[in-house]
Length: 110
Length: 456
Image (cartoon, rainbow over all chains, first blue to last red; front, side):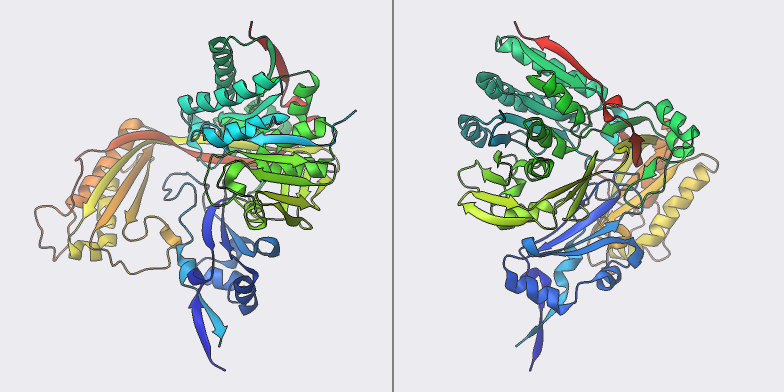
């Protein structure tokens, strides 16, 4: 059995990030149908550990990680180090922090 | 006799932040909804509007949206409810919205109606007294509990209202309600509870309607949606001819801007959406059942938002094209920082650099460490309590990029390109000093409701 990989961006319908209140940024990865959702969910590639490695943050900064079946979505939330819009801010809405998720490789059985 | 069904229209997820689209609003208004409800606030916009007491939206767009809702609701003789007046829900913005309603009523020669309004600003001394009495102002979202130092650094505080002042206003016979800072859910849940619908249905209805067409697809903001509730279910219908509320769009919206899609707290309890079931009711309508509401045991916790000034602020910008300088950008920044320190060895200031083309958007979260861009934009932010210091910090911090001393640089006539060889004063820097809750015996003590008459 061959295992190839496919990028998350090619499986998901929506990949986004946004403020969740003043102290957190939440990330949503939403799939159009259950097949891709289940594929990614079962692959186990997305979890607190891989996210902490991808963004180079301690796992303790990940406030929540949840698989949300009704929306075929995987969602996680990170704590900001300083509240949104403080001096030195680069993204006041937190809406441009998701791009590194695109290239996550999901194994696919052939 | 209570109603069996209640229909609420939500025209805009943040009234006045961008104008409501009229076509879908009037399609919705023609179906004669029972309530016109909309929240006008957000903490998404950063701490500056609350701190400086300025709008993030535009007064003309706010008036535009209020006019649509006032015309339609007065024509029908049904209530109109606006929460979080003027983005932040500050007292001045509540007054401004009440003034707009007065202006609009005059413009359209409206007959007399009752307008209820409430403020939500909280006096620092009210909290200080509680803290001195040993009460805890509990931190939210991993924040520590409030300290007196943080309280002292705060310039303006708003409490986030739940349903309580809105229900009170409806009981007093209000035709129009202008609220201070509010939970957007409450603006919709309050009339549903007032009309006798169960709390779980009422709050879920608020949850799904709060962002208007964000719960519909295809994506298109500022379009109207209508929520229809019975004692058993919530249905949400897109009004725009090309939009639909689907299982995917409604469930997807449930997690928007929230830490967790299953639970959400409001003043008075917690919504539990973990057993929600979604079904496609008809082409444009999604039906949701199974939402729960768990009332809080004991005293009600009310959320507080506080903004405190850090200092005056100037921005500078410098472009860089020289490949050697790009490669050594960190050394350039260190040089510029050191030059600022040399000029201001004793002053209190903050100096930050965002380097676009490297990691300007993501900062430390950026996984790509190697800069491949052939050009960079450096945005320099200088902040200091003293305005002259802030200006000099930004100016020296920007101009010294031009004078950076790199051993092998060939472009010795200047290592930065300027759009303007000056720095610009922008809004002062503020920070969110409070994201906490305060316990109260009666939530109305923070939100006293006042009533006036408007019209002829």
